[in-house]
Length: 518
Image (cartoon, rainbow, N blue to C red):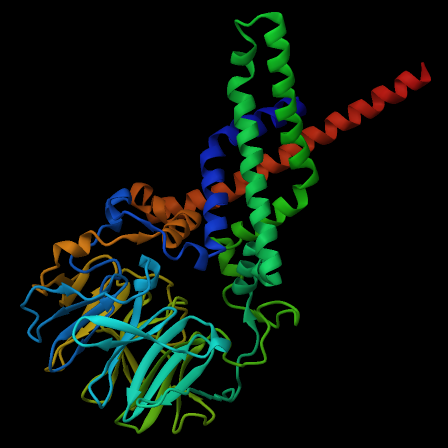
């Protein structure tokens, strides 16, 4: 009875998961090598409707830069230009950027004192030559990191990567790395979530670890394909065939079955490791890893003596209090001079683990802070935080929701100081006094060309691997339930396959012993 139950579970659950297992393994391999696929795009019309751009949503607009010549809108689809009143049709301004949609994701734009316009993508720094062409600028080769922010103050240009702060004079070419010391009562270590993620991808062990996990992904696809092939064609191949042909096909199917069983038996433990670590990265198991920090193994790729390794998110200057503001993954910090010991803000607004997407100082000295956790007004003098949309006071000690109903992906600041939030789902909005506390605006009409901008293959693979691609079909709650069950059933398929193999080997050993006795 147990054997029959294990056989049925392994066979029919495995068949049901086949497509999802293959997609998960293939997308994981693509995610592991972002630079390799940087120039490969996916047409946006192949994506579900929720991924189509409407009213500048889906992170198409992160912020604006207003100059005397034009107003620049930038975000995940590159740079677009219009007039200061947002009335003229926006025109695309992406000539000179590295090819590929993944290279067009612009995180910040600034204009220096000489009038030069600068733009930073996730991986490169550009300056605008003339009115329509971007020219890449050199960054230190030793700091090949993702760029988090770009800022100008006086004659100084600052590039903030995820781990370092680079500084240079706008007319110079050499960069200086600013040493940012650890804050008082600094939170050392790495989030358990990041360690589990690195273990799952193999990044924890460097390039060799990634390649090993790639091999496991290919192996999982092979196990899935041989299993489904044997299940679907085992009877059809042997039916309506001559004895000789039937014998030939039977040998072929037996070879497939040997591969299927052999790969599953010999690589069970590594496959279980990859599946369990991936399962742990999704709710509800995820909650056990997002609030705790540990010191990573010194030989791992996550270890660094830099106290701000992979923590920087944004930099601003507080002109009211004459101090620098640093947004990090562990909170907001201020210092009088760059290089001084940072001090934590007196109050900490809720912040999504994905980082800040809007950080603007208002005329009264307060700050507008927006992320996927929502939008908040921070009043430092009163040590008070107010929800931007609901206008209600916020308890700073409460844990933030990673994604709220007001997921902020950007902000638009007009010349008169008026601000409009950009929501990931809804686009540019204005707040209202009644639920849902916002309404769409008559913001700049979205150009038709924006809807045709491609989607990066790497981002598409990430959407598939995390399960977000299924949200338009089964909703957020349904997707979370699906990814949880998917991980659990994948473990079930692997373990029932192992149990069947173990029982089969046990019977063969017993039969062999019986033969020897007889």
